[in-house]
Amino acid sequence: MTPDDVKQYCSRLLGSESKLSGAPANILTYKIGGKKFAYFKTSEPEQWRFSVRVTPEQYLELTDQPGIKPARYMHRFHWISIVHVAQLPDDYLQLLIEDSYTRAFNTLSKKVREAIINNE
Image (cartoon, rainbow, N blue to C red; front, side):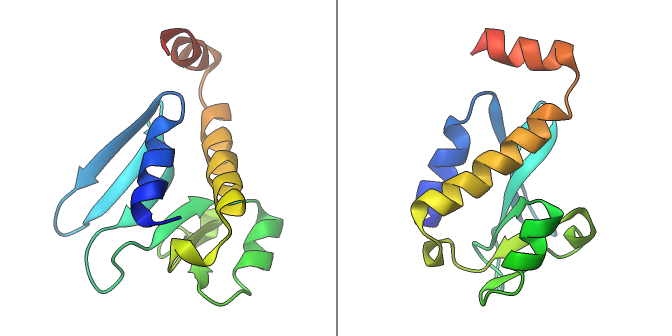
């Protein structure tokens, strides 16, 4: 997948919202009900690095692979940064995105979850 493919995929998830933060952060964030589930760095030198939250087990496994690093400032919450999204198989990348989305969705209150499901 290209960065544009990933952006489209994240945007299509139920209730997904995106926000582009300008300088100095320069981050394109994807959220569900106000909870972040993925983000891109949009400026150099880390342009188009993509980050998602994973399980502690996945975190250990994935950060041992070349091109996948602990996410800056978010690593303590088991977020990883994928240097080039095209390096991962499409189905595996989609699974990581969906898992991160589900983790964020499940932290929402029952009322907010129901509102998201019923409005879309």
